[in-house]
Length: 218
Length: 164
Image (tube, rainbow over all chains, first blue to last red; front, top):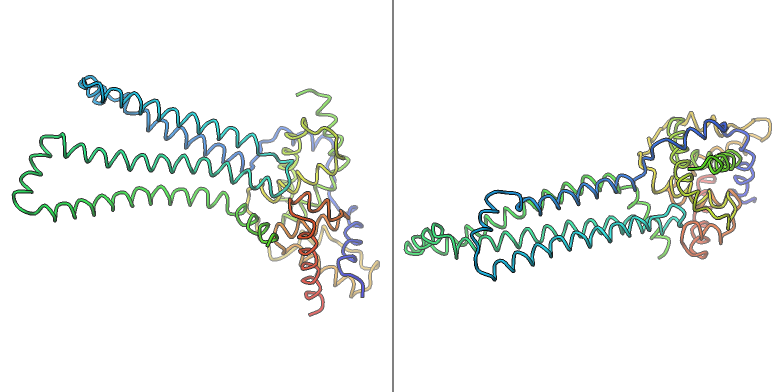
C-alpha cells in the first residue's frame, strides 16, 4: 500500500495553481499596515506596568504631607535611610528596564519556533518578576508602617495601652492579624486575577503550543 | 527606508508568495483570516528583511518567518468553522483526475491535517513541502530524531483515519 502521506504530498504540490495570487501593489501596500503581533501587545502592556509602578513609587515625593514629614525628620539615620531606599527603588527600576530591553531585543522572528517562544516567555517573566518584587515590597512596607504606628504614634500607643489594661490583648492581635492577612490576600489576589486575565488571554495560544512542542522532547 | 530595498523585497515576496498562502491556508479557516495572516506575515518579513543577509535562500528564510508568525505571533483567535466552504474552494480537486476513492481519501486527509495542533501542522507542512528532516528540525528547534518520531505518529494517525 502506498504511503498515504506521499499521496497527499503529490496532491499538495499540484495545488499551487489554486492558490490566491496577490499583485505587486497589493503586497506593497501591506508593508505599511500595522502589526498586531503578540510581541507588540506584550511590549505595550510591559510599558504600562513599568510606568504604573514607577508612578506609584514616585508619588509620595510629590505629596505635600510627605514633604512636610521629610522636613520634620532630623535624625541622620532616618535621612540616610530615606536616601538609600530611594536610590535603591529607582536603581531596581533601571535594572529592570535594562533587562526588559535586552529581552525584547533578543526576540527574533528568524529564530526557530522553539527559541522564539522561549524568548517571548522570558520577556514576560522579567515583567512578572518586577511585579512580584513590587508586591513583596508593598507588603514589607505595610508591615513596617504598622510596626511604626505602634511604636511611634502616640494615639495608637495610648489606644493599645487601654486595650492591654482591659486584658483583651490576645483578641486584639488575633483580630488584627486576621484582617491584615485578609487584606493582603485580597489585594494580591486582585492583582493576580488581573494578570491571569490579560496574559491568560494573550498567551493562551503560545503556552499551549509551547507545551505541545515540549511534549515532543520526552 | 530606501526605495530599492522596498522594491527588492516586494518582488521577492511576489515571486515566493505561494509559501505564505499555503501557510495561511493551513492555519486559517476563512478568506478574511487568510488575508489577515498573510498581511501579518508580510509585515514580519519586511521588518526582518534588512537583516536578511542572503546566507540562506529567500524561500528558506520565509518558511521560518511565516511559520513563526502563524504559530506564535499571530494573535487573533482562529474561528473554528464547521462547514468548510473555504477549504473546498482552495483544495478543489478536479474529479476526473482521480478515481473516487482516492479523491475521497485526499479530502479526508486534508480535513485531518487541518484538525492537527499548530506544531503538528507545521511538521506536516514542511514535510509536504518536501523539506528533509534536518531542515524540519532546524525550523522547529527540535532534534531530528524527535521530528521523525512525531512524523511517524502523525502518519499512523492519518492511516487510522483513512482505514478505520
